Each structure stands twice: as C-alpha cells, then as structure tokens.
Amino acid sequence: MEPNRSESLGFVFQSRRATGWGEDGGTPKDGRKELRLSPTKPAARYEAGQTTEPRTLEQDAPQTGENPTPTGPDASGSTRLIPKMKSADTQDQRVKTFVLDTNVLLHDPGALFVFEDNNIVIPFTVLEEIDDFKGTNNDLGRNARQAVRYLDKCRTAGKLDQGVPLAEAFTNGLSLNKSTPEGKLRIVTAPQERHAALWEDKPDNRIISVAHTLHEAGERVIFVSKDINARVKSEALGVPAEDFESNKVNVEHLYPGYVSLEVDGAPIDELYAEKMLPVDRILEEPPEDSEEEPKGLESNEFALLIDKADQSHTGLGRRLADTEHLIPVAAPRKPVYGILPRNVQQTMALDLLLDDEVKLVTLIGSAGTGKTLLAVAAGMQRVFNDEHYEKLLVARPIIPMGRDLGYLPGDKDEKLLSWMQPIFDNLTYLLSTRGAPNQNAESRTAEHRIQKFINDGRLVLEPLTYIRGRSIPHQFIIIDEAQNLSPHEVKTIISRVGEDTKIVLTGDIEQIDNPYLDASSNGLSYTVDRMKGLGVVGHITLAKSERSGLASLAIERL
Image 1 (cartoon, rainbow, N blue to C red):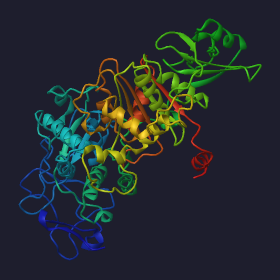
Image 2: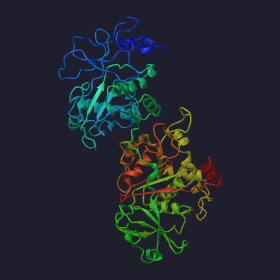
Image 3: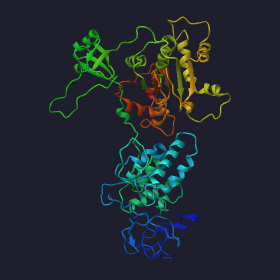
Image 4: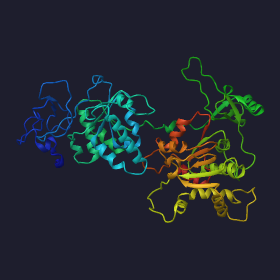
C-alpha cells in the first residue's frame, strides 16, 4: 500500500510494512528517525509505526498527574497521542467514550447531552464539516447552527481540548428537556495516526481514526454515526459502532390505534343499548401469578369487539378521551362529501376526523388506503358544508421522488401547482358527480369550483416553507406526506396550531423520499409514538388498499 501523506500537517503516517520498522517498534531498519514527542515536555508517545496491534505507551518524563494536551505536531514534527480524559469516572470501567460523527449533530444537536454519565469526544473534522452546513437555509443548517451554539456554551465551562464537565455546561445557560449529563465533552484537535485501511485522507477516515486511536489506547469506545457505511468501516477495524437512536421509534411495535378483543356477547349488546360501556368490562385481568401488566386502552383508542360464541356478532367502540368508558362507533349514515368508508379502519379514521374534540389526528397507511382522501373529505365537510372552521389549509413538504426537476417557471402559486397535484386530484374527485353522487353538481367544472374556493379564501394550498412564525386559528389543517418531515419540523408545524384548529398528519412511513430519514426516525412515526394516550390526539393505521385491485396487488407483490 502506498503511504498516506499529509504534507500540510507536517507529518507522515505509514504502515509498519511501508516504513520497515523493526518488530519491536524500535529503531527503523532504514535509519529513519522515530516519531516521538519533544523530551523536554512530559508526554506519552505511540509505539512508532504500529497500526494494527494495541499500542504501548512510554513516558518520557516523570508523571505529574496531568494529562497532556492534544496540540498536534510539535516543533520537531512529532505527533501527539490523544490523552485519555481524566475525571472522577476515569477508573470506572462502566464509563464509555462516545465518538460522535457529524451527521449525529446535524440530526439532533441535543445529542451532546443524552449520553448520561459517559464521555463525549468530537473530532476536529466534525467541527469543520458542521461549519460547511451552518450557512444553508434548511433543517441541516438550523441544526448545524444550534450545535455550534451548544459547543460555545460548553466552552464557558473550561478548555474543550482538555475536557469540559457537561454538568457545568448544562447549567451555564443550556435549557434542554433532558436529564443533566455527568460525563465530559472533549474536542480532539490532534491529527491521528491512521490504520493502514484508512490510508485515504478524507473526513470519514479522519473521524473513524479518532475512535480507533482511543480504542487502541484502552478506552471503551463506541463510534456513533447515522452513516451505515461509516459504522461498517468502524466495526471492521474492531471499534464498536452504533446508530444514534435517541429519537428513533420501534416501527415493529408502532401504536396502531386499535385492538381486536374477543369478549362475551353481553358487553357488545350493552355498548349499543346504553351508548356507553366501562372499559374494564372488556379487559381481562392477568392471572395473579403472572408478571404481565394489566392491559388497557389509550385515550381515543378503538376496540373491535368480537363475540367468542359467534364471530359474526361484533361491535366497535372508542375510549372517549381521558374517560374510562367506550362509546359506540358506526359508519356515517350519510356520505361525507360524497364518500363512505369501505372498511373498519376507514370507519375509525372518519370518526376521529369528524370529532372536533380530537385536535390532532395522525393517519398512516400504504398507497391507496384512502388516508389523504378521507382527510380532505372530512375537511371539506367541516369547512364548506358545516362551516365549523373558517378555512381548509392543505400543505405538503417540497421533496421530489427521484431526480429533482430543478427550478419551475411562474410565480409561487404556479410553482406550487405541480407539487400539490395529488391534492387537486382528491379535490377534483370529491367535487365531481362521480365523487359526490348524492349532491347536486353545479354546471361549472370541478376545476372552476376549486378555483372559486381558493379565490374566496376558504381553501388554502401552500408549501410548509412559510409556516414558521405563524399562528393559525379556526382552520382545518391537513399535512400530507408527513413522513418526509423530521421530528423538529413536525414540532414546528403542530406548535403553529391556534385556537379551535384541527390538524391532520397523513403519510406512508414505507415510502420516504427524504434521504436523511427512515421509517424509525421520521416526524410522523415520532409523533404517533410520543403523542399517543393524550385526550386530544387520535391515530389510526390503515391496512387495506382500496384504490384498485391492481394497486393492491402492486403493494402486496412488488
């Protein structure tokens, strides 16, 4: 392998094979001078040239109880070893050192403060990469700027290159909804001797080299990155690696919004006869010798009741907000702006959408399950027919599927037309005689009627770009394709909700176009998991596609 050189830093890193160092790490066979620190300063050095085996440390001066400061090459061109962080927990073998990749801080700047009593190391390369992002006008830029602010606050607690107690930094003006961390934060500025496999001088390799060097020095290092390939490279070098999962959701056990229960026939009849049923009538207590916790229903969770003796005898109820009672749920007797539910999940979804006491509704489902159509129909019903809300506001994130088409011609509304076409398709269907067979269609086309609603200000279609800073009262809001939003973006949107406003989030967590999100980390999944059980929140996962037979086959087989 060709030696990896970094002339700008004034040092050379080469493998044992390339340099010809002796097996004992002593004098090189070609007479080259061994890399070591200046003997006039108390410090430790690497066993020169060693890259794939654990390093041994030698002390060139009497120990003074102080750790050397990582300042990079000294006047003689030698390279300093990363000093181990010294704290009260140094001797505690349970304390770990987490080396953070750039993408972790770009995903969540508060990641600095979620590792409890463990130590945090940030390679200097991470700061350089964050600096490249801080000027961008998007979520990554915002997170980059926030991460820099947090680090600046930490700077007031001491010297970052020697280690800063995060507990002190946490009390120096930081206001985060997290427990106080007890570890230390340190920024490693010294260039590191890289493993032979990391010979190419690029940011990922420099960051992994910091974790590898600390690992070889005996620390319990874990490399934290959201880059799958970086984690694989780290593990290949023997350094344990993990994804950052602080805001991740276990999608395999994501709250569906309903349960199916086998019960006696009497509670089903009582539910519809009395229009109410105590929740404890349908829940079985676990055996006394069982360690299982009693099962309950979340607020606004649905219960599909099935008679044990007769499977065709069923009932559907919903726990009413924070009460301890079920209320019966049935499909609407009249079409909701021309449509009726086609399955039990759609019945549940319409029940939540038409209940004005449920201020936040989340709908998850694959393509064709009707999540957007149901939301738009309920919004049109409550705004245009019932006039309970003043406006229907529909928004979508501007994220393309596949290659971006680039700049679009026209003004804001003309540019938005292409992005909002799926919403126009639903509106056109609902305003046509095909979508509303029981309504008297006007002579004008559906497109003309949509434009009239827009001109009257009762229908608003806009991107999410302009929502920050707004307060939106008395409106029915639909955020489509919410799976492409980050948790922070969803928080920003929901916090815009004003008095007497209802907001609906819809999306398919299996079809995410945002390259920085997945099914576990997107804002829609995060909202479902964190907001469940609140009296003003409801959720349903739609399972069956109703778009067409071909669409159902594509979802099942492709």
